[in-house]
Image (cartoon, rainbow, N blue to C red; front, top):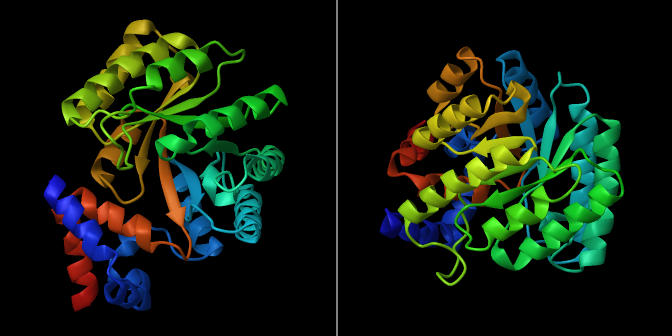
Length: 306
């Protein structure tokens, strides 16, 4: 599977293939995993998800901008998405990658954009998550979260990654805050050196279970973001054993992935959030979904064959 992932991501970066894919647009099969290219597409899908009993976590695709003006333009698009979400039934959530708005260029620039987005999110009654990226950006993201919380933006949350060796210390740092921030726990998807991340899946999974237990004990809201059904079962059992109220935990899944599981969890009374990406910069996200499992290539073949 690692060889498949490496090969597919390498081929996906080949210029002629990327240009062909972008010309075909979402017809290629990306519509399975991406709500569309426009904000209207994203909001229409968000309303449908709400009608189905889940809640949307809207994400404007894009990351690692190269110029301050690009960061500003991306921030404008995210402001528009947050305001648009106000018309979607509650609960409402959105996710932003800090490098989208300049954190990788200049921490002060990134923080200024994140602060403004936090204000807009608060006005629209939207929970705003600062997504976590590769390990060089972890400290700056956590610093931004703590600054925003100190300023009263308690509706802002962040993400922790179980494959990073440092994450247990980050958990304790955040659990020591009052109030404890809402935290999403993921396994982690960036290619990282073994010196900072566990290379073995078994170690990542074991770390996820340990971190999840600690977060559930720690007092804040926990978003269990995984499609690993064994870990989802572990989370539900641990929550019930601790006697925690339903609002202390949600399960978050990707749009278009394991839709049967999504429906089953809703039917069983779980609070389910769906990470809902949209935007013109869909190609990189789409290829990462293809790289996760060979079966996803079927959607590309259907797109090619009509």
